Image (cartoon, rainbow, N blue to C red; front, side, top):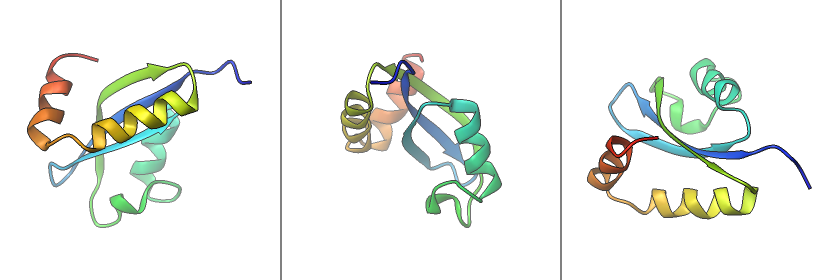
Length: 86
């Protein structure tokens, strides 16, 4: 079992869409999305601008479940989540 925390994050893209994912290293993951090399295919044709929300989880499993919950939210609900604080 790993001691590292998992994070659920939301990234704002250049077309104002919101991308949700999980990682153990927020800075590295944002850099990967911005470079277009190891980032998600989602960022082909758009640029990852900034991480606008992060939430920590103790395990990959809980992070994945939370990621799935967030992905089911409407854009308005995601914006509300972001505004409610990190």
